[in-house]
Image (tube, rainbow, N blue to C red; front, side, top):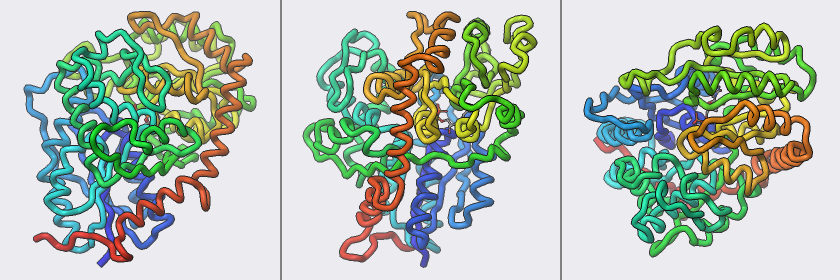
Length: 483
Ligand code: UDP
């Protein structure tokens, strides 16, 4: 019987990619495992996952994707948060996951279940099946420290983060303004806050937590967690920093269309282009898009900008993929003609990893998603941090104040960013002392990331400890057939 590791990602592309990369990394060093990945297809926009899944299926035979039956969400779910839908969907998925693991165990010995934090309700399924369950934390250790600590903060105050008006003192982190905590946790009266609190409570109950980071990137946060400073009254589970795990396809091929951007980049001078891309879900209003355009024009820098249609005003379409953008309507009059060859605007999606690794790219304006951050680090590209949703404001604080990997984009109270700010930050990134300091630090972390992933490096050692944890005196724990 083959030894199987079952991975259960959350459906959003950013979460899916790093989980799949974890599977690939395991296979590289433990080729006798087979990796089974449970795929949930959400009834809302989760980014372009299909091209990625088919590419992995075609190239890695030891990874099999198990598509779980579709789930419809109850019609009464209304929320402003994408995360609410994800938690609900994954909660309803429990019987499907139980069935899938039972089927896999007919032909394989299931050694472990590795789950995204969004899938926390599945811990009860793992307990029923008597299989060790680990979390795979798709963000960094600083974010993990804040997730652990949420339960402690919750007990110490009755106020919501949005009303607290204070800096939070979380072990291992710089002071975090309470309003920079992950967006769905800002209001404790919302249902989604309860889910995040449950995650905070469940994290210590797992068999261990795998984090997509590496030791030299976040030494303070990792130490604070492993020293047990982020959890009260119970032990902290083993932490395995096994990263950076990022998609490594640098060809850009078959990525929903390359939009011609790699060809265009080939014609630009070395390190001259600023890339602007805002994750799988980042959307701006028309006014904000026009303001970015003006800022880019005035900055005098070359740029490659991924533009999407603004969010729909129709409530029923809020969580669906936006339509193709109409650039003539969204951008200022004559903008594209004036920019000529100085800038390229691509619609909806760019092959980000390939772009970041292109020699013509010298800077990245990012929404601070964790994958994007790691991808920029691995490509040695300095960043401007412009957070939009989820835990990205939190990430900005850490990227700017703790890691020195990014310059901050500063917004006004209502979240709007003026053209002057775009112009200033983009120019600074490419031309100033501050930009240079960030560039040097990113290059240092790029080298550290390579070291962590090579023979004897911290991430490789963490992987072997994880695999050892599945063995007791040389005998692997597993579940056999459960039918
Ligand atoms: N991505 C991409 N092209 C785009 C937008 C996003 O390839 O136009 C990829 C990006 O490389 C990253 C993922 O989508 O791997 C986004 O993950 P991240 O954690 O940065 O942000 P999220 O989408 O989860 O907010």
